[in-house]
Image (cartoon, rainbow, N blue to C red; front, top):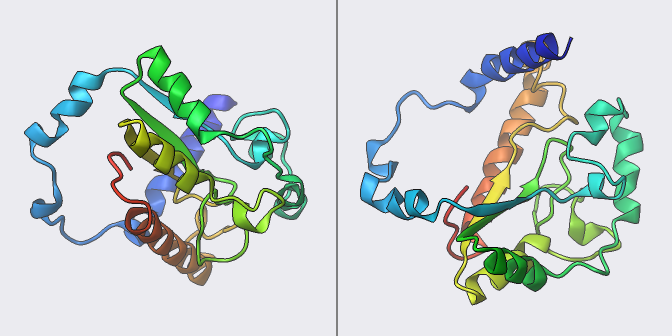
Length: 196
């Protein structure tokens, strides 16, 4: 069953390709091998999944695995309080472990953003946390000379157009617009980002 589900999800992701692809790749945007050498040399980094699912004490697929509808899951935003959060402690822990880089989820498949975005109000600044988690993390990482990585998922379970772009074409286009706008914000508003 899990294998079939995984294959189905992969097929759905592949089927949305035309919504997110360009007709040609600008080769000037590709990094030469020497610019990626630091990645090959680093070998050890820390990837942190953090978001509404943390309230449940579960991983980033909690909404999907528990088969929660988007409105019920979305109410977790009203409980997103992160009084013990410390980006500086995250970075210090990573450095003490020998990590050369970090990657933090800015938005996972549930659609909840941990950064200041102009796209809607489903984000950490419009929750009891009232915090731009990504800004605090990026600032702490830059201060500690740690390479900065940001994970962003174009998949958003709130948009049925991701899975069925032919059926929900305008919905899929809305999600595409959200992706482009939010990725632009992440790459424009937080200084140097080493990994996306």
